[in-house]
Image 1 (cartoon, rainbow, N blue to C red):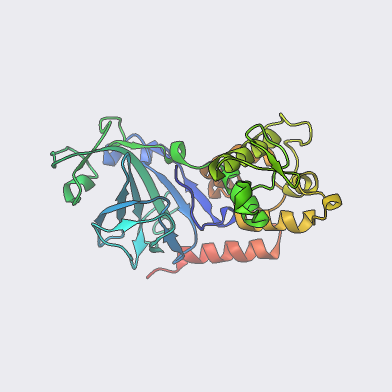
Image 2 (cartoon, rainbow, N blue to C red):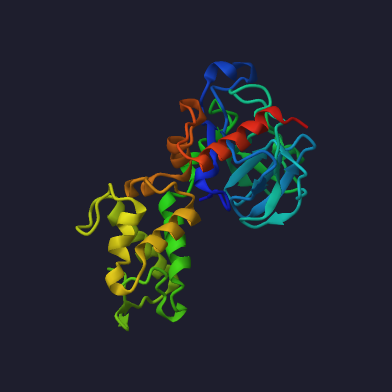
Length: 313
């Protein structure tokens, strides 16, 4: 699973999805767009979404990384910071978003193109008939699977995208900063995963189980299974129940931390935590629907992104 490491959801514009605009890509012999296009801001840093091995870097702004099962392509970068043969970790700087590539919004609209293919690592190189033949240049032998799927083997990145609820759990984990001996990153007082209690907090037999319990608690709040929560709640509404002032908490500060950490605007329902990150930015920041703002901060962000359209190197 990958996530938009270090990118705030409210600051990412969704420009184009996988398989979109078939008629614009027929000249390439594919059935539509082969990845997703997002705009994180012209010249903003772009970080690796996953751990992996860099297998290809081009002078036209492409970085290709593989793990054991997938190939990830980041396109339209400048000042690239990695080279082929290098190992990277999630969150490592790859380069900076440039305006080299065309998009459906017009020539040279600044954006990051991101695409994914399934792969199999090999002991030695095998020839493959690919339009985007990165394996031919890779220092690590591998082949692209399902290359005859009409998209040169590329698949929908959304299938491998983290759900937003994972971000919320990380925000709560960071805010609570519970004693690790509890193995309880969400400061939970009860969970079906618990193996005991300590000072009225659940104690788990591993930190991983504690984090799973937090995800479970957030999920049943967001999907309507909990009697304590309503899926239409905002983050602030959620915090008034999850961390009430009667327990010595400040729900408003708690909610602000979650909103800032995750990149929420603050009025989205918690049911949307069950969306993937790509689905979230498509729903709330989709340029094709118009990007209208109702605050000075939003106008400034929009201006900064539109400036990328007219600022060409």
